[in-house]
Length: 335
Image (tube, rainbow, N blue to C red; front, side):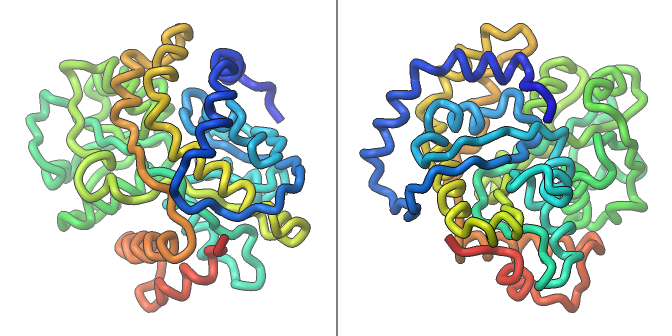
């Protein structure tokens, strides 16, 4: 495991005073609580891009402890890397976008699934940033343009590809996808080497601030119908579930609490990030746009999985003949 980054250490130290408040506040929740067995557990949880993730910050202020969880965070560079940590036995569970989980789990037989999905935690923060000087006004205008992505097999590309397909453009042949490190995207937009980038926050917000007057937010998943959908999803290794069936409920309950309590702590977190010179500019602006969605489990999770399965069929990543309901029941675990 990589050593915790300075930013994670800062997040942990800066919020200790809030731990008592968080531990007390959950007593007054009137929503239905997930039943847990109260056992003490040590868990290895792969977390994609943990720096500046408000959900992780909240979990580390006592919410994990609330459910007797001692959690080792396995830092991952993205959703696919977090999933790989589970597949390779380096993590017991992982958080990753559904658009990364589904193609992976789809390839496995029902009796050999490496993980089960237990909870959709929050919505996505995808952005399609486009150069202003191109005078493009709608997604269909991107035909023939160069779009940068960190990974050609990642959720950023898949999200934008679905939007292209919905608007009649072939997601592979109509545009030119270019793999580029996130840190180079701003310079590439300024130099005209890329016409657009598909990215997610916090890097998407950072690039938007770096390229003010040069790029604009043509499309995102934080407005319209997309903001009602789940993105970041918890998957637990089937081997870990076999050893400890109660793990799913405990970890799901903790992440549920963190997401429910996030809206009340936006300002505190923004103030904490002001102390970190590497934090995104106008962190409060980014946090204000973070979707305060309600976590989904059981039937509600399966419904959203079905919707994503149908969209991935549009990209050719799943077969048209496959039954989305069957897939959802196969890969989701009720808690």
